Each structure stands twice: as C-alpha cells, then as structure tokens.
Image (cartoon, rainbow, N blue to C red; front, side):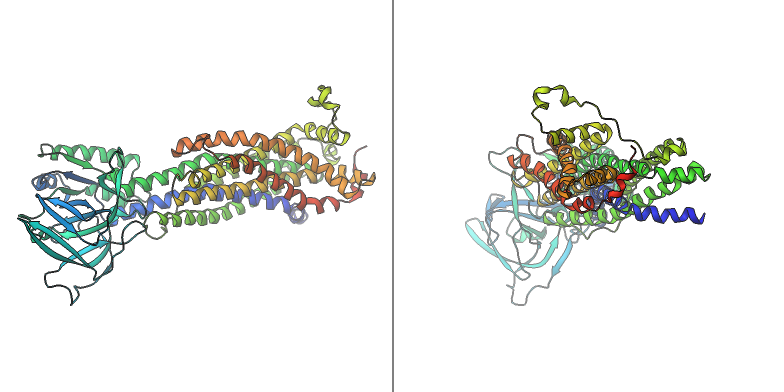
Length: 638
C-alpha cells in the first residue's frame, strides 16, 4: 500500500501540466456558465426584494375621469388601494380645467407630477428618502413643499431648498406660487437611470413616448391652493395584491414575472377589470409589464440568461471534449504503470482509482475556482447594470443552481470516460501493455488520390499531412475543439459589434458581450495549448528519433508546428461559419442583431485571434520540444 501511494505523488508530479490544463478548462467553463446564471438570478432576486419591501403596485388603473368611486369596490375584493393622480406637461406649461398653468424652471422636457392624499404616498411604491430638510426660514410665506425624484443621467438635478415658480391664469388674472423642494426621493416605479418614458406619445411615432425630465410629488390639497375649483381628481388607483406579495416573500427563489406569477396576475387582472368596468370615460388597467423599469430590466436579465444557455452548451461541449482527450491520452501514457500494477495482482478498480482521483481533483479544483470566478463575473455584470438602473446592493442570496449543474455534468462525464477507457485497457495482457503502443500504420490519405494537387506539395508538407490525417480521432477532436472555441470568439465579437457599433442594447449588455469574448478567448487559448502539449507528449519518441537523425531544434519544432497550424487552420476555417450559425441562435433569442449586420472586421478578427493564440502556444512549447531526451528514441519499437 505504501508503494502504491507513492505512485500517486509521482503521477501528479509527472502530469502536473495536464492537471493544470484540466483545472483551467473546467474553471473557464464553470466560471462562464455559472457566472451568467448567477448574474440573472441576482438581478431577479434584487428586484424581487424591492417589489416586496417597497410594496410595489401590482396594478395601476388610469382613467380620464375621477376613479375614487371604484376604490371601495376594489378594497372589498381584498386589495390594498391607494388613490392618487398624475398629470404631465411639456416645457413647463399645461392647461387644466380650461386654465393655463405654467411651471417655471423645470426645463423643456416632460414633467410628471404625482398627487397623493395626505399620508398615503408611502403606502405603496414606498419611496426611498435620499435626503430631506425642513422648509427654509427665508422661503416665501405661502411656499408649498414639494418632493422631487432624485437626479439621474436623464432626470434634472434639484437641490434641497430650491424654489420653483408657478403661475395660473384665472378669469384673466395671473396668480403666482412658490414651490420649495424639501425632499429628494427614489420611487421604485422609476428605477431607470437613462431611459424613463412618460405617458406623452412622440408625434408621428407609434408606441413611442417622450422621456421624462422631472418628477414631482404633491399633496392633492395643493391642487385647490393653485386656484382650481376642487381638489385634484383621482385619475389613478394604485393596487397591491397581498397574496402575491406574501407568496413572493415566502419563496426563497425569485418568482416575479415567472410562470406562476403570470398566471396569478392574469387571474387578478380579470377581477380588477371587472371592478372598474362601467367607469365613465376610458380606464386602463396597467401591470408591471407596462412599467418601463420592470419590463426592460427583466427583459435584459432574460437576454443574459438566454445568451448563457446557448453558449453554455458550446463551452461544456468543448471542455468535456478536451478533458476527455486529456484523460484518455494520459491513460495511454501510463500503460506501463497499469501493466506493473496488474502483474503485482492489483484489481482493475484499485489500479484505476488513482486516475479517477486525478480527474476528480483536477475537476473539483477547477469547479471551485469556477464558482468564485462566476461569482466575480456575476458581480461585474450586476454592477454594470447600475449604469441603467438604480439597484440595491449586490444580493447575498446564494445562487448555485448553474454551478452544480455544470460542475456535475463535467465531473460525471470525465469520471465515466476515464473509467470506461481504463477498464478497456486493464482487460489487455500486462505483457502487451508493457510494450509501448505501436504507431499507427501509414496509409494513403485522401489528398494522395488527387495527383494534380498532391504532386505540387513539397515533401515536408506531405509528411505533415500524412501525420495529421493518420490519427483520425486526434485530428477530429482537435479540429472540433478549435472550431467550437473559434465560434465562441466570433459570437462574442458579433454581439459586441451589435451593442456598440449598431447602438443596440445597453452598457451592461456591452459588458456581457465583452465577458463572453474574454472567456471565449481564454478557452480558445487553453484548448490549443492543451491539445498541442498532449500531441508533443505523445510523440516524444518520434521527435527524439528525428534529433538522433540530425534534425536541428528549429527543424524538429517546425515538424510539429506544421501539423499544429494545419489542424488549427482547418478548425478556424470551420469555426467562422459555425460561429455565424451560433450567432443566429443568439440573435433570435435576444431579439436584436443579424448576420447581415455584423461588421466586416468580425469576420477577420475572430480567425486572426485564434491564429494568434496558436502562434503564441507554439512559442511557449518550443522549450519543451528542444529538451526532449534523445535516449527516448532507443525505446521505440523497431
């Protein structure tokens, strides 16, 4: 047993490069997949928390006439109802009850004013008070206190104590008023930072609305103070459904906008519509889907999720393919060790346990590293959504579903393949395993059947092509791996191009596309490095023989590099159309972008990046080639 345990340490030391390769491959794949999954979970969970904590309205009923007579009927159905009103005007001017009203100092954009009954403003859509101050001592005696929405990249900035002038003309007489800002708040209905729409349609543009510039909050009693004949009519009812909030708060995972929420929302909306039916004038029942903040935020979260699902499959496929190749080829190199242990009487499972442990350790360490990489990635994506939305702090809620799913798939596949390949090898006679595996017999390759082409190729390239095509499994795995990783680079560049140069999406989506590109590039580099390193390790005796025959270091390296470049070039060429196909799926899911719209540079930069990584890998592995011991050639089978 003591001797057997020593072989563990020796194996790990001898194959440390392969262990690192497995670690990096798994880390990149798990980090990317779980990172995007965590990001969407965190985004949804964060807004779920705001929805419950600030009692966001499930419905808003807006009408042309007073809706206060409908409030009691809705309360009888068990709903929480807040009565209020809202009006909008452009350029500081509007007309109410036939009287012109002017609000000075609010800019030329759309100004929205919310009216609430005394003490009811905080009952629903509870505002976060950012700052407040009492009425200044030097304020006009008849000044009216007003709350204002916090400043953003879109909304105008106001300071506490700022005074706004307003005037209304009544029967030919102009009355002036002063409004003093005493509160700066943040309304959960207005979390958007850069694009918050009004109710004012853009002239000539269907379903397009003007952007808000200022948002104020006033008491309904103020309306009569301004010279109008009555208090502000209740043209808005804010409705919260307690059952939805209770279910949301009790559920440990996000539920807002999920299928259960949608079914419940649909059922409740039918009740609300029935309760407000018969209202004089038109009345619309609006849900959170009609709120720009919630709808656009969840739409972007869904896009990130869908991109993750599509690309996760490719990342997983490449990772499993390369890790499987690494482990099966490691077993081939360990033929002698397996034969010795079999000769000493070790049962197959005892012999294979150390190789299973090797795969297990490499995969688990990579998965753990991938979790933290994914958590960091999720934080970066979430943090950059602050560019477009005012969000709470990064949620501490654990989001590990994607991590466990991806890690389990890679781990199960790797261990199963290692076990199957190992059991197949242990069935052979120890005497057969003790002898190095004979090279595959040379045979004509398909290009040799095309004399017009084959006769024009120099001898050194003929030799390389024969070697490339002789080992079909190795050739296939290398080409497919390079093709898929190149396709991911292409997809990352294409999405980035759509977000930046076609001005589609948000800054956060640009960050997501940069993340995709970065992880795809890392995967591409690690794939090429791992497969090339394995190729060199498998052919040590062949390369040593070339050295014995007098080949210079440069010639030996080029002998290997030509094969690497040929195989990688085939994978890269196939990777571009596969990347375009991948983009079709991505664009279809996220709802923007097209193959025709991809910039010309993407078609050039993606393959050039893969070629650059190939060239970089050959430079990194050159020292390994020149250090091969020429005595290895004496061990070759004659």
